[in-house]
Amino acid sequence: MQEKEYKIRRKNKVDRCYLRQCFLCNNDFYPTVVNVKKGFGKFCSKICSNKFNFAGEKNGNYGKPVSQEMRDRISKTLTGRIYLERRGENNPLWKGGTTSDYRERRRPRYVNWRKAIYERDNFTCQICFKKGGYLEADHIKPFAYFPQLRFELSNGRTLCKPCHKTTDTYGERAKKLYAHRNNICSKPNSVGLFH
Image (cartoon, rainbow, N blue to C red; front, side, top):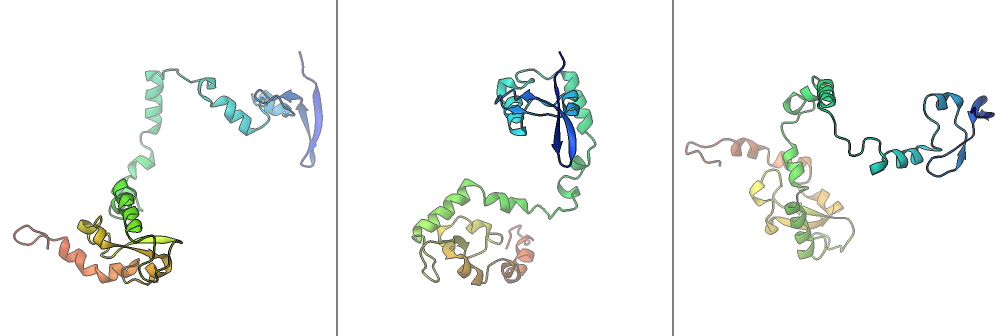
């Protein structure tokens, strides 16, 4: 049975279309003849298509095991890709393993430390005594240069953003203040202790 064709003006041109009903929402829509021949034209929108095709058991591959042959083909396709060769130190954007501090700040131990600082200071800036607003937990001795003091409550204070920016350990100023510390702390002395 051949479907009836309609001519619809879209974007200053006339498209040959069919009248169809969406498989999911049963709304009427007009897919072009070309799209229907390509296998499209079953859904009125991408939203309906995604809901229908990728929803658990409705997905055509749901629950089907992947054959070893297919696994080998996928593996062969992915091997030798540039992104696999440019991991870690081979990446041109490598900054010497700086992600460890970044990850440390997302861990529950750090989040709990921040929360404890805010509660101890009653959510009040310790410089201007403004309560609430956008607050930050400041390390008095910088996080990067004093790893042993990172989670000490005595090394933290609650500050509002403007007050935090005025501290001498904010951002790049900490690097200038403690630049000598990197050279001293990274080298062990004759006994083998870091000083």
